[in-house]
Figure (spheres, rainbow, N blue to C red):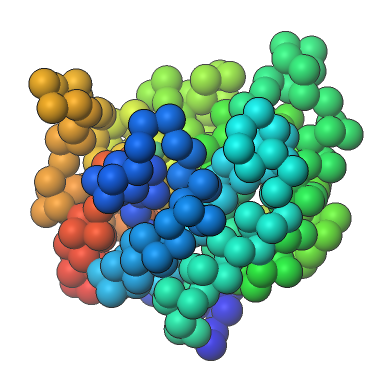
Length: 291
Ligand SMILES: [Zn+2]
């Protein structure tokens, strides 16, 4: 099977998968239950969502381990089970999608702010992310994706941790949820400059705010011209609160057209974040096949 870097080298735009959390809500996860709990409690449904994204045409799927660092799990029912969780989630994804679809190990922030604004120290961050990355690597992932980061220090510590345990291709993606910047004030230009020495396989944006904001994030990345491939997974629009709960306004066709536009603008790996279903990704596949 061609590796992530070999697939990128072909010049073809790769399609990642869509959301985890919002699709689990559709599939019946109870409020307050972390998606990672389903790796043990509902592995069939975790595998089912991976399979539906693979059937929609995704070239890669992300493991259900976004909140799976030992630190992030500390106060919940999976405390102390990070190694088991991450290895099992990697295995579930591989079983679901087979050998031809890549499995990316998802790593999200710890939920703590870096010192001195918060309590997260470099030593603790490196230790927690290294434990998570080691279990993902042992579980057989093809690459590691640091996603939805907002603080530069934490992302750099996570990258250091991943590199300390493996040579897997590494992607670093930030959530520019203030529109042009992350919650901690970072712009795509800041991220590109800070990541330059890291020899990343991918760099980019996920979650964030509107698709128009993401288009601006992409334009800023393109202007900064980072060496790594541009990775973009936006939400299906800005969530709106209605009587039935939260809805995402972009339907599959309009989402697909707008995300394909991001690929035309320079994104090399595209997919979806919150609110994007397998139907959104199937529509995106059709658009990308026309590029
Ligand atoms: Zn999201």
